[in-house]
Image (cartoon, rainbow, N blue to C red):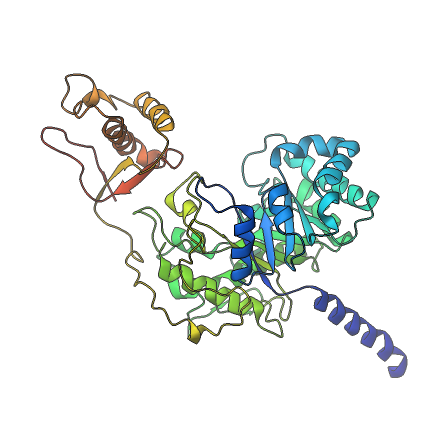
Length: 465
């Protein structure tokens, strides 16, 4: 009996090792384009090569970028825009046309390996797209088959908030509103097509939201003596990212899919941010990215406590600091490069550079503790004046006497300039609405300052952190 049982077990082990070998542990880079000062696609591809990235993900199917990636050895991930999902889910001919137009012309010369349907569709409230997501994925897979394209995996990236529970990791559970109707059929599709569950996993946000209870070094892969043991499994964790990934693994297992592989579609750490955004600095960004690359590229693969030895494909966010990304300041400061193409700090995505060989000293972090004091909200440098005018009108239309002081004849009317009027309006708006969730952002037009802009009789309302 032993002899009979040995052969299939050996064959299975061989099969697993072969399938693992086909999945590269090379780290890639997310190439976002939300900036008005970024290098051209051809220049960007050269910069991607200089970072030794073996993968690149773009958030569309930009033909100029795809042409620039021709005859390179870089695996490419392209994306179908969120707004097309509903129509594609209902029309095989539209799906076929999209693949024919955006994939077929490039496939022979560009290593397109992943086609992602939308981006973080399940993060925000449903706008009619949630229930079209998996049908659209099935349509796109069928279109690829129609065109005899076999090397492209179809998936969709999700933020970690698809989980309603992630702590401890063994308690990982998908949200009840999407678990049965959307996630389960998605996992069935991913399992059947041997694709990946693509996840955007950011230890930075988890730490920043709970920095009183989570050690910063634990989030940065620096906690040599700090561990966490999951009481449900007795698995021991040495970093926050592993906890996040295993929470997803346990959530999939809970739905009956323990073997669907995880692909980190985005991870990273901001190199700067707003004054009230703790821990967003060059030192932490370099430390996290260097350490995560080291972990993910180690051979043989480390995996996670729940999935030891599993290769985890991954893509760092992002190539550039993108000055037109909306939201808090961190959103515009995830890049490995400044828009002029220079490195913000030394980094090697191949993992071949030992940590000890990064010689250039990093600036000491100054914001690892929450800022305490008063801050003001001002118009940022170099922004579009028309957009500022619109934001000024918006701010003045909100709240109680938000812009009284900048009316003609009032104490802050002079100097009569768009910059000063909008800056007053932004500060006044923020002072009124911060407690209710208002931000100093105005779609990237505003920035915070600890320097009081008040002058003479004109007192700018400030916000105390």
